[in-house]
Image (cartoon, rainbow, N blue to C red; front, side, top):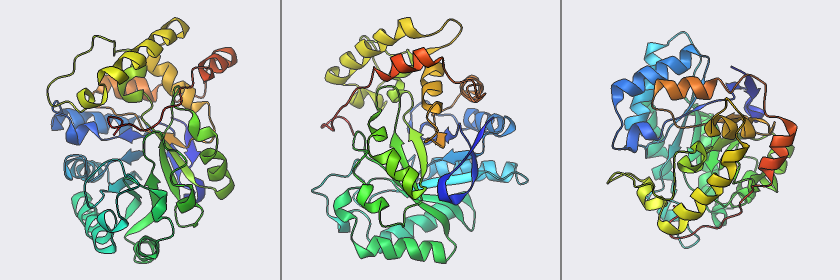
Length: 323
């Protein structure tokens, strides 16, 4: 496992982190399977775990708390997220700040997270949604300062809305935000335009989320894919999204090198960017833990392939189904 400096936190985090969404919210989630996969990740050197209260109303957080207890001698970095008060994802311009992150709500859910993890301090707390019209509001700024001063959290971050990598830049410029979590993958390269340069300038840590475009970039989703009832992906991959996503994935298939999977190619593409500190694929099975961690070997991709993949950039804008 390779490690990267996580912005101004100065933490050395594994460049492959662990996205724990699937362990709290999906129908097929199994706690015993999750525990075995988490333990394996720790054994293989992974030390950054990203969860949220919204992943099963604290269920995923509690799984992380149990992991910490099983590995008391290892430093495992914990990251979670405060849900918006209105419990609506993503944030929209019409949502009032008071309906999203008033101070009492921020404090309440921070305490819930600490209780779920059974720790005194969370390494990284993040706003799970964000709209930059809130950037100048003093309430959240004071709340962040209070959480750090009290020792409840060591660092504070923002999770950017899907396909809006600039919607948060004003908040970053306050100097109160230490990290940013943003969708970045072969298709979604827009963070490179404005967000990454600012993070570089301000020494803000970068977490790349949705490395597989919710599954498209694993190569396992086709135009004929039907998701189980209750699976969130069924509401995301509506026909107007599923068809063009599958078609673009089809155009990538001939580019996958012999002996490599599309998922491996997708992760290696992200790791080629030094501005990314850690990428957090969702992993529920041990085989996925092994294969994803195996990409952290410093080898990257052939330069010609990398340039070709960059030409597959796909700029999208939020819609009613993008969530």
